[in-house]
Length: 229
Length: 377
Image 1: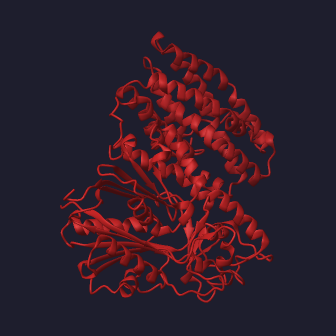
Image 2: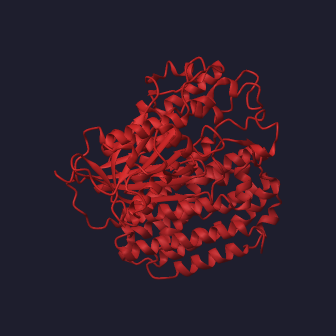
Image 3: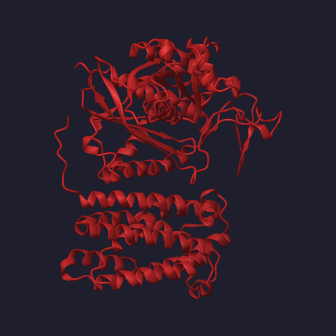
């Protein structure tokens, strides 16, 4: 028999386990969304890619803003998390410019992407993010980061490659995806650190997982509702 | 419901072990380029020896039903059970000898058993787990007092060059697409069986079956391993929809979409994490992990994912026989159980976890068991 005695719940591992299951369901569902299914099966059209960039720009702009808002609501009890949130917001607050350059390089007109509204899915996603970031000590938002950074870490690199191959575009048209594919690895490492700090009991673990579930569903809604503004 | 125990196990592997340098003789030569790809596949899967029911000259004395019947006999002998005592037979295979009738009928006919109830289960590796559950439940429910579950494969017969030459699949230099070539270097032949009874033997070890889980994820995956299908640009067509043309289109070749296989890994792992979260599996308390996997590279990836999620079963507790017995599909989990019971490593009280991922259209199956001492011990 084993010499192991049952240990107290390891909330860090429990949270990673739950998040892994949220991610798996998210990934399985996302690859069935029409535009992503076309990308993965080699049938992406130029208009698909332009539409994706147009519809992502608003969310990317809001992204660093809600992280900044969340950091202002983190009390000194969560000092290390606040540092992480702040540096994260700074890392990403100009990313939307990359999207605009990609849009033009892929054959779109700059004014089209700059004047694009949030689609109905982006509205829901943004609404939830600001609502969550406005609460005191919103550590559950780590779950939101897990989904967004996970997308960058796992999908952005392969997507950049697939888009280039299928649409015969240069680096300058896919730099937003390529950059996140290369750089979100260290964000995931920071995220693992943050979970260690934040997931200390059932309540904090459940909150992180709940936020991940909601953001996973709303992100997918955003990609399902392209140009439905 | 009664408890039920695995009271015996047996296997049949045709011929002597065939090492990597001799295997090409059994599956047949296509082209130098095909063999280069084969060496790469062998590096990834780590298999050193396997068994083939096909002679190098392309003849055989075997069918999959005959091999499975040999395994059934070995399992009954191991349990010390008279052939008349077994009244239920659940049989599993990926590709039966015939399209019609069912596999269990062929095994029954070759086994020398009297009239019995039977069930044919057809899937890929997880078909063995379907048969396992059906035998287990029949004993638990009191329908039968001795049930057999058997899995067998005779893959090598489909890998002979004559099944490929002259079809649309083969390129001018006799090279196959990767998804067809991959399996030629991965799968091999054999059969294994278990006996399930409602009582432990007086002497000797048995395995009490504690829980069972099987989940299909075909809601999110297209077929990933196919046979009898014509693979088009966008859709998969059943062979029957192309009368007279299916064979020429390569419909009867076994194919594996390797990229899709790696996309299934996190889903399989997620189902494992669900078992942990719902309390059926406590990783620290698993004494032996009998995991069927098809390649060392897949195993390495599983280890990476499980470690990150804090659900890793330490590698010294993984029991495997892939490297010397090969990947025998529906026979694999029974081969693992049989080899484990005869390894001398089983001790009363140990917790055993069986895991069988299937790439066909994505299934993940588990069984939890406890090693039991004999009633008089």
